[in-house]
Amino acid sequence: MASRTPSTDAASIVALEPRRRLRIDEYHRMIAAGVFDEGERLELIEGVIVEMSPQSPRHAEVISRLCDPRFVSAGPDCLVRSRLPLTLAPDSEPEPDVAVVPRTAKGYGDGHPTTALLVFEVAGDSLRKDRPAKAQVYARAGIPEYVIVNLAQGTLEVHRDPDPEAQRYRTVTTLGRTDRFESSAVHDDAFSVAALLD
Image 1 (cartoon, rainbow, N blue to C red):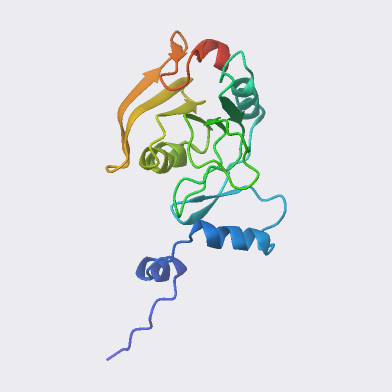
Image 2 (image 1 turned 90 degrees about the vertical axis):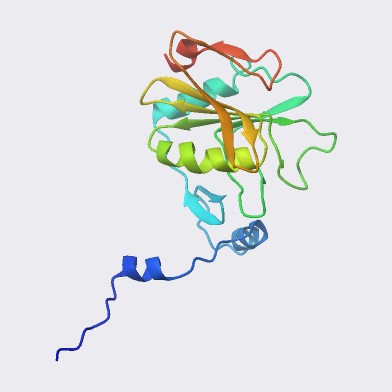
């Protein structure tokens, strides 16, 4: 009778092992200890360290436009932050492409914002991450409005009315180039989708 040799295939081993997810304090200690290279673009999503996608020129241009007051008019009570962390849960610290956060008297020198009014993710290759995983994280945190700028389709996917318990948004609307985005969370923030994408 022939004996079977146990499989050492890495994927098989990973499938069997329970996963140990990181907390934000552990992630911060790793950063402080210099575990990651200086130029690495990482974020913590539900306890998993995720590499951020490189930016194409078009991706970068759309982010720049979203930071322009002609597109995102945040008003004096808010700040527009680009690719900076949001500490949303004990195991999630995403770095959205653009976030509109409340302005505080002290600023954010002692800790990252723990909420946002409006978050934009500009998605090319990152769409597979931005649509399911990040929508869940942002809904669980109660962020009122999450917008995916879908570069491949030339659309905005507008997520509203978060259900933190179900970790999803109750309303998702797709806007095309002929439509106009009007924020429900940030007063007077409105722009043409075509102007953003063309």
